Structures are given as C-alpha cells and as structure tokens.
Length: 396
View 1 (cartoon, helix red, strand yellow):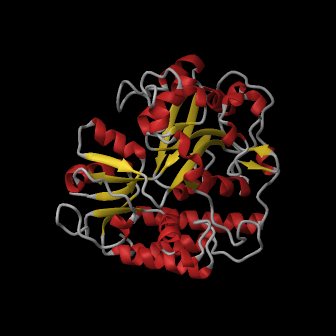
View 2: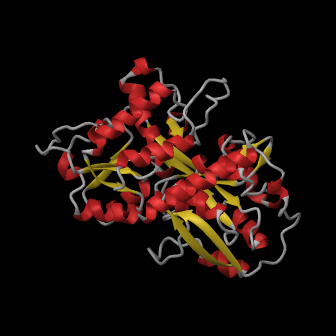
View 3: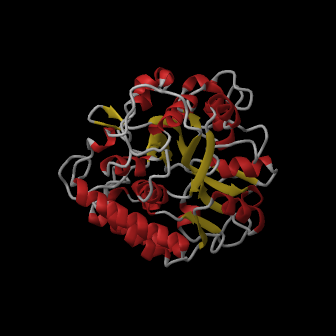
C-alpha cells in the first residue's frame, strides 16, 4: 500500500507538471538557484539515489566513495533510497530538503519540465570534459542546449536467472518471464518469476513484442500507438499469473533469489553482483530481444539547501576511482571512460563485461509522451502507463 501511495503521488505530481508547463520541456525557473562560483561547503548534502549508488563502506568496506568526500569537503552526506523513478520524482517535487538526485531518463525530463531541477554550470565542474562524449549532450538531461545534470553511470536491465534451474544453458529470451513454460529443471515457471514494480516496465513488454511480433511495427518501446500499447498490456496481463512478486526493492529481490525459489526475473546488475559475491547460484544475460536500460544523471534541486556541497559532489562524482569502484559494485558502465583503465576493483575487462560496447543496443528509459518522437503522431502518454500498470498488477 505504501508503494501504491507513492505511485499515486507521482501521478499527481506529473499532472501538475503538465498543467504548469504544457508541452514545453524547458523553463527559466531552473536557473533561479544557480551559483557562479563554488564556495565553502554548508556542512551537509542530501541525495535521493538508487540503491547501491552512494556507498560509504557500511555495506562492504571495499566500496566507499563517501567518506573521503566528507573528509575533504566537510559536507556530511545523507541518502534517501528510491526504488523507482516515480518515487524519485515524487520526493524531489514534494520537498525542498534534497540537494541532488540520481535520475534515470524516465524521470529527468519530468524534473526539468516541472522546474524542479536547475541548470548546471559545467564550468564549475572541472571534470566535465572527461564525460563520455555519447553522454555529454544526451537528450535526457540537455534541453535547448542547457545541461541539467552531470552523467553518472549507465547500463542494461538484465535477465537474472538461477543457474541450478537452468544448468549449463542460460535463457536466451525474455519469454521465460513473459510466457508460461516448463523450465530446464522440469518445473513450470508459474510463481517463480518476478517483474519490475514500475510503469516503465511496459517498455520491457513492448521491446519483447518488437522482436516477437514485428507486424505490430514497434520501433521505440517508449513511443507506442494505442494498438501497440494494448498489445504490451496484454503481455503483462498474461504475465501476472506467473509473477510471484513485483519487485522494486533491490534487497528484497536479493533475498527472494536466495530464499524464495525465484528462477528468473528482470533485474539490475547490482543485485546480480551482490548475489554472485555471496556465492549464490545466480547469473545474468542480455537476451536476444535486447534490453531496456538506464543512463543516470546527477541533477540538482532548484532550491538545493546546500548548493556548494552539491557542486563539490558533482565534481567528486566524476573522479575515476569513484566511477570505477561504483561500476564494479553496481555492474554498470562509468560515465567517465577513464575509469575503465587501472581500477583495481573493476579490473582490466570490467567495462567490457558490464556492457561498454552495448550502448547502441540498449533502449534507454525515457518518459513516454503523446507526440511520437516529434512526428506529430499520437502515442500513449506516461500518465496512462502509470494508471494502467497499477491496474495490471492488481495492487500486489
């Protein structure tokens, strides 16, 4: 029920954004809190982040990129973990207590359109030039030539699976979570798979249909005509009878793979890495249909209470050790490619293993809009994804 309330809050916030901004993506409100030079820190920094993104060594002493920042700047870091992009939007829109958010592409433009985040002065981020050129002007944080954040990490939503169930032959298709089937251990997948508890998961079903039902004509899993959208919903309605849990908490999914007999699920590399580190029988794959994914940007609240500490973090977030350690911990790809060389935890092949060369094969999260990729066609907007997906999962 708590998570349903978060969804409804996010939907309300999204409606307010649309009412305030119409179809415009950029506003001048985002510049109101901008600073022209970085001064002494205010002593604190509050970040809304994905699980595993801001580590201080308490989970694993080898992974700590907070303590040195606090020592160097005097800014004490506090973190509010969010399980979905909608939760991030709701938290940032509903409060002025947060400085930064690690927003994925299905949240970032909503935050920009609503005037919730401010333009970032990249001249105050000396390491900006080290950011992957494919990310520097990415459309999920760049509007009208203005940058509203600093790229952080990116990667794919993988298919995690139990190796004791699948043996030596990993699954090669998302069909093992979308269609009822007998798994290699001789048992049905019913009740043994999971799905992501977030409306953006509609795109995973659409990506599956793009490959398996090409006659639907799906080109972009985030820009769906009514017929394409209904087909994706039908896949998700059929999946409902197979799903043991709709997950949004990474640590609960880790426990489910360990103790509840989960055989396969969409997942983040973070959960897979934690489970592999615990010697659980888990592996992951990007299936033949491809994968959705995320390219996350650290964005600054328009009324950030600690702007100097925030800018200090934006610069700190790009240092090669942090970028490499985080990539090793989360299974992601650094926004600063220099982190791929010489990082002890990541290793020499870590970036390649995490998908450095798969950038063009990932369908990165973005907010669905009525305008079909600027063509003027009619696509199903995100507010319907929110209400319809909530109806699909039936309040589980």
